[in-house]
Length: 343
Image (tube, rainbow, N blue to C red; front, side):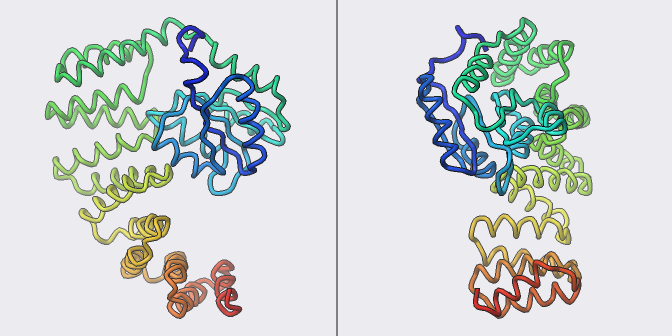
């Protein structure tokens, strides 16, 4: 955005992501000295993405090495999100190598800085990104997208489609194809909608909403196997993004279509454990084991849920079952040892 188009510094919101609190504080201090006033802070990528789900931010500065979800994983999720991919993203790392630069560059990173970062370095990068002019083609594309969305909201589908088709002459966009699919679905043109959604996921294979929408169409077309694959893919992406409610809804759709889908029960168990719903997690893992009783990982996950639910004896049996299937399963062995010493 240009300087004249950008909101004032007192309005912009920065998301600072770093596993060290002193580094987060230092970055906030430097940005505050530049005149910025609004900050969200997170200790890793998973916490950061939960923040991104509930509020709008204008800039992300993230460390590279973090637990749960590191900086690159967060960048991948943000760059693949239809609502977040335009947010400027700076990565801060202790060292930089060629592989890091290439991988982050593919995902649209705005800059990579080496720790310790100086105020001058940070100000130069942030100011440069905000003052980078928008080229005429990008401005035209954004204006056309806004126009097509308004036409769609008014139910003027034919004119909206005409605008979207002109946009595709400028730039192939997953979001444009997704919106074309949305209109075709509303018009009852299911085969054309599927073609559009498939083009969306070919450009962005993490477009969860496109997979979900395809699943809904395949149900209408009475093609349950295809619907199942689409909902499971959508659920996996939602789960990766920590969008637990959306993931749960997608996985439950899969189970409506095929109650014997072991991976989905396991994924639901993961969701319920994250939400501290241990009884529901245990039920999901037990259902998974009915389908595949020889999966040591499910026995292990069941043991973790039981342990968290204070069912120590049952947890021990679950870990023992995991080890019986795979004697080299060191995590299960460590959990048993922890139980023996009273962890």
